[in-house]
Image (cartoon, rainbow over all chains, first blue to last red; front, side, top):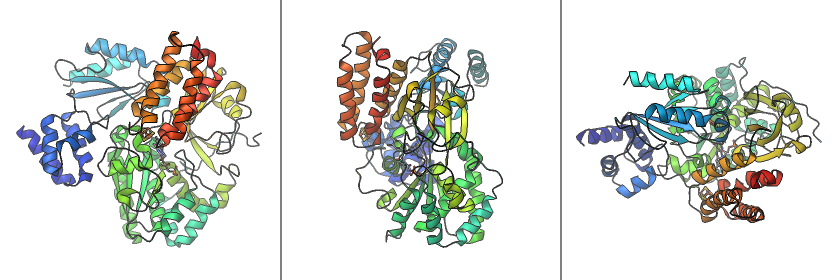
Length: 155
Length: 387
Ligand SMILES: Cc1cc2nc3c(=O)[nH]c(=O)nc-3n(C[C@H](O)[C@H](O)[C@H](O)COP(=O)(O)O)c2cc1C
Ligand code: SF4
Ligand code: FES
């Protein structure tokens, strides 16, 4: 809780304390924490002097401003049509096997969350995915296995 | 019948362009000179709606209000579109240059690039280019600054008024129109919002002249356009092509020999089946596109394609108005029920009526355009929806 307070204060110092600062602050929390906890929400509301309901209502509008607990690495696979056609389903299956979770879940060690998302703007190189802000394209089962092993090694 | 043949063009990514020089020279011109050039070129917005860019700038320039803004729409969320990312990666100075030129015309001092959250990885490089750009402006003595604002994973924020709401720190819910952005946009001040590509085109028109641009394309669709080509094609990617070609030529060039349909304009665009390739013109007089061209060959189920689109809309609807929120849910349930045999084939007609109702009663372009793909797919591939 004290760390959250520090984080939010720091972000508010950087981005300001107006309503227009709200999204940059929430995005800053995501970068650090991967999700916005109740404590963080309350803290933001206090810093900006608006109601926690407003903060919550705004955050939940945006699919990247998660309010549910997420792992250190959030994997988002594109589910839109051309990635789907290029084998997104196998990629999901491989990931589910590797991480032993289903889409929507987080690993027990809180390292990985597996999600689907809409078109990422890499349709000519599908299937595509994001891990946090990093892009991976033209995924194959081998490629994805390697990528995840790399992440696991570096945790 | 189209009289244009498929022709590759190299304006957007053209590397012989000295951006700083073009910018300096353009900003030396009077605002009326620039405006005339953009108006004469016939350039229409590349973000989908195709509003004449010169007119938009003119309207904003006529507003008496002192505080005005230029916004670059880099939310690029339409399924099958990826050209703005490429522009921002390869020629960011042309985008910023277009914004500065627009700022000169309308009298703005502040600009914003609204970048979709999925493109966060571009931000650091863009900020570096911005430093260079701001230094040039300082040398010229032109008072204009650009900031980057990040989106957070919401397709609807590409809709201009939702984008302003998002920039103001709110839920990205579209506003009522009118008033239009040129009167009341970001912070309720006169704002020009343009697609990334439109801004580059404006910049390049200042360089090559409206005449050169006008020589390309047709009366209704001047110039060239970037196409994002994906799906069943051996050469997926980004191509700049002259507007006004027949879809048939396009398919010949980019198809895999077995193309059964092309979705023109993304999930909110139209599906054109093989039998209509010949008569279909790509441009504002035919089927317009923000650049998304998805090819499907005969191995694909058009039911799966339609279901994927409807799910996309259901998820991305902001939920603010009932026709769109509930309509998307019902369309999805409806096609699933027909496929399972729980509803008879005639129920498709009911669903099409619902889509038409959404077109006239939804508040913004999202709900209004669901019927485009829904009806064009259902009309042309009815059997695939049922069996
Ligand atoms: C649901 C929806 C999403 C949109 N997404 C985008 C987008 O990602 N990029 C874009 O430039 N325009 C998008 N638009 C169109 C914008 O509202 C606006 O018309 C455009 O940015 C104007 O720029 P232009 O005249 O240069 O095309 C979208 C519209 C709707 C209704
Ligand atoms: S049409 Fe859909 S996206 Fe647009 S305002 Fe209504 S609910 Fe929101
Ligand atoms: S469809 Fe997957 S990135 Fe566009």
